[in-house]
Image (cartoon, rainbow, N blue to C red; front, side):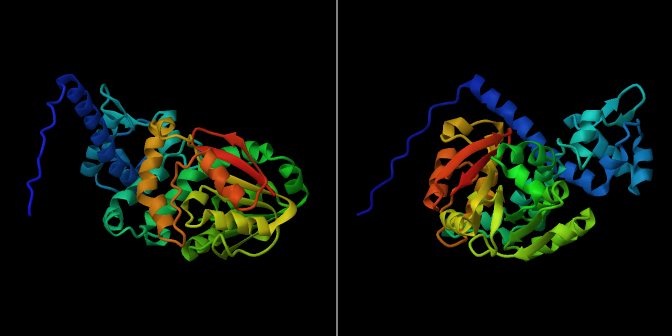
Length: 361
């Protein structure tokens, strides 16, 4: 017997609230559209050619970058409308303020954001794969994403490592800096392109650093980056997952990767086996509170989006498939770490984007 499905009509929207939401949509759509232009300007060197702050015409910027003036003029106009480039109406010229340089044109700036746009471009490129995963319940492995995710992730996180890792995060760990200065054995697990490994290797030349990642292409890039940075003598990079890397270490570091793992408890147990008796596990994770309500803010908005499209699918593509997500929070991470055999777990440091935890046997 077939029954008719009753449908109820939703109440009419409140006009004022609807207008507020539509205003937000205009801003959001503008940001989304501008994102593609940021990637374009970064790839073509348009921002870098404006780094001096000199006021330029579209024709001059085109000449400096080997591009065509008509395209550059439209790009500059869009960037000025977004507030990413400054426009002087009196002279009809464009420039970058020091703040805009720091965000778009200085790769070493702690405020560099071009890599973040590169990461977010992968969300659009890989949306069909994630949509299919929603239907099937299967995951989308890290290596199945577009290449811009790998390079963008390194570029997005590297400025934070440059500013915080040596001067803030490592000193927040009990006794770790002294051991690194004397000469320690360090494993950087899930190292990706090796940015975090290289930062530590530069700061502590007496220590030996090994970066591990299951993604072979990332390990190849990390080896090249170490050679370019002049730290090949005290670094090496090996292809290995988090549950099977070898060696014994005074410090094991996980940078923004524990939540991506299918079996983070198993990874924690393996770290416990590979640590020296008085060793330390440093876990750097995206900033998050324990409750959803704590994370309904601009940073949480970005991280939940990335978690939906990248982090959770990556975990569900692996064995166990715990699916912690990028906003797991301290309490959930504590459960994972202690279940892996660690007796001590504490929050050691934090930034607006990350929380640093110290775990000991």
